[in-house]
Each structure stands twice: as structure tokens, then as C-alpha cells.
Image (cartoon, rainbow, N blue to C red):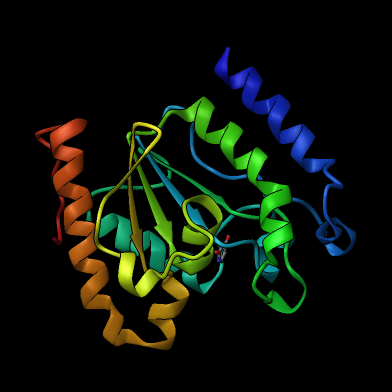
Length: 196
Ligand code: URA
């Protein structure tokens, strides 16, 4: 049963000591959504609020992420599973180090293998570097599909980048339009996107 596998994995992640990030965490943040989601969204790592609540994207950038998903007709309760490259909060919200990303990657790979999403949306540079290409540049690679292990992968900007620089919203809308187009092609031709 996939639910049982998921629970086992979550317990293992909760007890993980593979890198020093475990030392300062309140708790590991495994992910949210049901295991049969067609879309996975992958961010960077938990911030302060996420560390406290044990859920990904519950702070300001999470609210923006939910709005972006809603505009495209998606939601974390319905068809999107949300996880991060690292499961434990990096102190002072710094970028996770390459060794921390590498130590945590097998957990994410197991999540992806269980969920088997059709589409992965990578939010920002850390997600792109962590999953696809350590030298990847988000400014260059956003908006273009990558085929990775039979999954369509779309890199775009992280919502926290949009909060710092609202000019980037235009590009994210373009990228989300592409995601809707692909979702209609490979999952549901009747999918409605209310604001795209
Ligand atoms: N930013 C992320 O990348 N992930 C979270 O869970 C929260 C903020």
C-alpha cells in the first residue's frame, strides 16, 4: 500500500541525522498533499514557520504559492504534492549547502518514486540544482521543459523571489501557462484554469 510506504518514509525522515541540519531543527518537514498527485512542487527548504508547524510553504511565500496554483486551477488538497529539497530548516534561512542537498536527495527521490507525478514544478535555483543540475541557472532554464526519468519538469522562480521582485511574476505566469498546457495534454484535457 502506497499510504503505508509513505508513512514509513515520513517516520524515517523524521528521525534522519544524515546531515548537520538535524541539530537545530524543531522537526523535519516531510511534505504535504496526497500520494496520488499528478503534480509535485519542489521548493528549497523549510523556513521558521514551516519548522514550527511541520508543513511546507505555510509562511508568506506559501500563501503566494497557493495563489499561483489556484490561478492555474490546482491546489495542494487536490492535485499537488509539495515537498522541499532539504527537509530540515537551514539556520537563518540560508541556502542549503551542496552536501546538505546531497544528503537529503535520496528522501526526495523516494517520494517521487512513490508519487510518480506526471509533472514536477521546481521553485528556484536550489530546487533546480538539487534535482537536475548542480550548475543549472534558473534565469536561463526557467520556462523550458526538462524530461527527467519520464517526468516533465518545469523550473520557475521561487515565490520568495517574486516577493522581493514582483517584476518576475510575468515570467512565472508564462511558466504556469505552460504547466496548464502540459497538464491538459498528459492528464486532463478538460482542466480549467480560472485566471490564466
Ligand atoms: N520556502 C521553501 O522553499 N520551502 C518551504 O517549505 C517554505 C519556504
